Image (tube, rainbow, N blue to C red):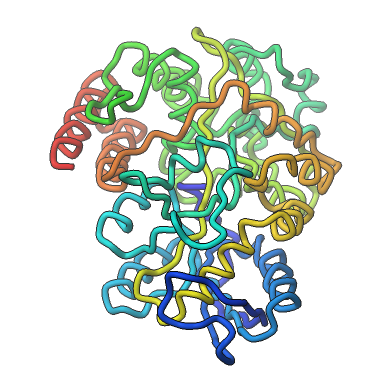
Length: 418
């Protein structure tokens, strides 16, 4: 997940677990030369229990190393990591996103996993391996993957006598339902349609037949008429139909929190919020496929990776841990937790069964229409700059046609700088 900064995130914490490792090549230390402590940086409290179980399982097989899990809220994670990486004190192993892999690998902050003893990326989808590969070297071990579905509140649908979403739904189906579900007297909106990219806009662009970035990663597609049509569809819920909270309301209160509290009937969101919605008091929800647009179905696929800090003092220990994180046992633990879909091929069924109250198979079925999350070497730069423009469009400060051109121009400028 890229955008998600949940209002339910806990404060930063340090949780200690125990693990160990055996010998590995291409490192400055010997993994079995004595007690070693390494750190593991993560940001999602929903996944902490599973990560702790994985650390414990790792220790059972490798009793000479202690792993300390460092949990930092997403809102602070990258700022903290940037400071630590520059000072030489980053965690030995940490979570990496697709938008930042080019930056960190390009600056020499990560160890290449390619060529390490026992490196095996065959259990993972090629698209995920590709995300973490730069100049022929893979820097991240795929951890999980995510797609996006249409979450809906069954109580609100029942009250409005609207049938639940299914695979037959189109854009018009969502528009019609959002109007019937909106109840201003009760403070209920039919849908939340924020200017978020991974959960919303990148998908509607695909459904309209547009693209965010060209295949050669050199040109923006945001000003393409089809891409603009995808943006228009999402914007209309806010500006035309008035069936979505305003941009300011969705800034004041995270849309996922609005959905979890029963104020929003539909919300396009990823599988990563499964446990949030499962644990939301009084929420009776489920998830359906995203609707088809003029070009059919479409959703972005993305995923996190586990990486090794280039300046770690315990390379062998860190590699043994990352190798374990990429193994079947660790991925089975992750799948059973229900927090995320494991990247390891063949284990999605375990994840689907982990929370039977939801039709989680929806997210797996979405793979048929999934496209890789748009990235380039400097994704973070243009993603930030284009988001600023998109936010202005959603706030009504600039019209869509003008804003789409501005977003494309700034993105092209950033891409040219590399």
